[in-house]
Image 1 (cartoon, rainbow, N blue to C red):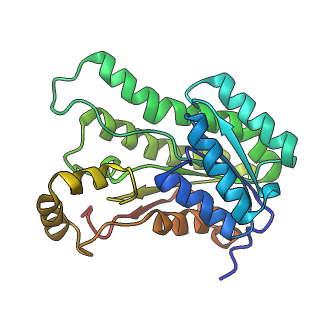
Image 2: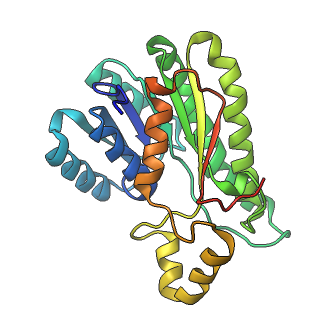
Length: 256
């Protein structure tokens, strides 16, 4: 299926490794031009260089910095528009897991987790909306199944992702009249080099394999490429009547 993404301008926030990198590569394979971003300049430059060699230097730009900072977000969008003239798709892959287990979580920890997993995403989306109204583009938020139902994840992280899912649904109603679509993808357990699940496998592979057998009907991890396929479809004209959707990609783990 031709997703009709050739020549589209895409910003994948948080895309130097793992799910974000897989999404960036997915758009590039579909012919899009992609801005990638990351907090660590060395990793960003290495990733941008590799992608440029594979897909063409005129189709990749790198943006270094922490997208929790409003100035960094402004500069990133200005660079995209200066380079390519517009923005068609924002993929907001912003956030990180981890944190305090249990109910007794300090207010400072709640604030830190929400800063990373919700407010940074809100900031990027708000800044991008005027550009997306002009192009009649769309947003895809990367959420998590922890925001869909109880998976045993940390309370602040789960609550932040649930808030993100609500943001996506409500923003879709706000922007629909402007022709801007908004959707979200909630990945389950995704395995990639350097990720949390690789670390857990190295620490206790038998425990991880039992978790997959007990909780995931497909009995395996997902891959960044599988999440990329979901995201590129939702961002494409092929999904032109889909907005306000939350697509769960978890191998059947969630039950609600």
